[in-house]
Length: 206
Image (cartoon, rainbow, N blue to C red; front, side, top):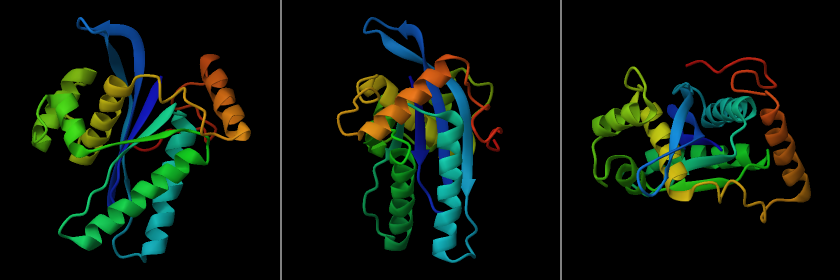
């Protein structure tokens, strides 16, 4: 099972991909995640909104096509005091959902508190603690930076631990064409179509 987390943002959008291994940890059999890729997608703040959104959608689509996740997990957006900021975040969250849905990939959402509690055990954990725990869980040699990248990986870890493979294999809401596309991609990956060798033939910049 491969999970792609998206921490939406108009200027910086964190993305992270992890994969479930066969190993489990603890008495309840928590899946052990392995790191596949991490990155930050960007748009230029001086561009008009429509061009910024178009640039981010293109980058999100590239990640989906390159890494072929079984499920895309997006942070659930809540209203904040800065309305313009939350609007941009919500718009990018929608782009991530469309990029996934257009490729027949199911989408799940988790709140920031859910993610923090799952990764650190504390729903109000600071970003530094999230970075530290993500580094430890995935066995990374250095902290994922910026914080947007760590948040995206934390989203993916949260989903893997809380939802497992049930969401990824739930195709009830997909059209027949989407189901065939998803099945074809899973079959391709099982025969050696691995990360970094996607249809675009390149890896996104780290």
